[in-house]
Image (cartoon, rainbow, N blue to C red):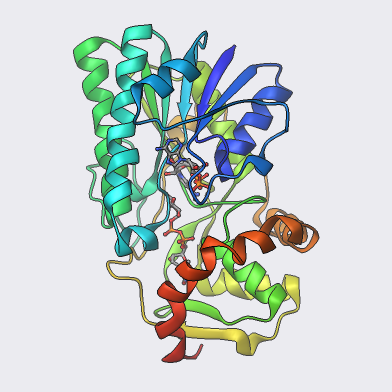
Length: 332
Ligand code: NAD
Ligand code: DAU
């Protein structure tokens, strides 16, 4: 199959492109190369179109001859959406609509990569099912929810063949260091302070990028039109427990851990019921301890990937996000 991977120069999208190529499929990448997009995440010879999913001509040019589009392209960081939500509406909502218009006219398939954050947080026990109502908390999650709500509308109104995936917190190599695990790992390797939000007892369900991509690939090949599939790691961890595991793996000094002011609107817990996707034969395969060890090793061995990022655009963002918070932080 020839497949357009939108946002394929980002973290999960680039893992997905490599997976498709290994399976013998043809992949074309459409990516705007925002701050988190990185050509170095991809094999040099991959077909690449530099463009915006919210621009119909860019999509038409990139999707020429493709039988399907898998959409990873998004503004993805909750903390950035708290600082400024403008681009989140553009890419996560408007961009998804442009892709839907294209697949409608070209009569090809779409997989919309969404997130467990659309459900909002779950305080106590229980797990979100695909039929549960959407209750997003952050501008990021609301823009993702708005984008994915267009999908069933296009399926019902125009009969397009489109499916939705809702993945949980993903980790692995090539993740931009603004996110929790690569931020903590690279700061540990550099002896920099580690900003833990609030009490650190928030719960995330960690999923390795390879497992997330395996789920999306299965949905691409076998998912039904209008169907939604949770893709979760069945691996709920508090942030403080993940930090402790990272201390053990890096040998960093525990005094680096700082309790900082919490993220506004911070979701307490996510949890996914994955029985629908498991019924298609998928299950997460990478044990957390193993995946985390390999991820730490990757960041230790690939400073040439993340050091230029941390000394570039990221520096100003980091100062804005953490400068004042770290100066009033306390030991955790
Ligand atoms: P990322 O930030 O690493 O990558 C996003 C990519 O999209 C970048 O390459 C960027 O340049 C590109 N992009 C942004 N705006 C674009 C536009 N208008 N046109 C074309 N390209 C554009 O993100 P990620 O963590 O790899 O996430 C990929 C997808 O998976 C997103 O849709 C995200 O919502 C979803 N998701 C992520 C996670 C996670 O934990 N990282 C979990 C569940 C779902
Ligand atoms: O759940 C899926 C989502 O996971 C994806 O849709 C998002 O694109 C992705 O960014 C991620 O969102 P989170 O907000 O859960 O991930 P983040 O890595 O930003 O934070 C994970 C947890 O760690 C969260 O409870 C906040 C906390 N945290 C994060 C950062 C960056 C800290 O305590 N300190 C930090 O500096």
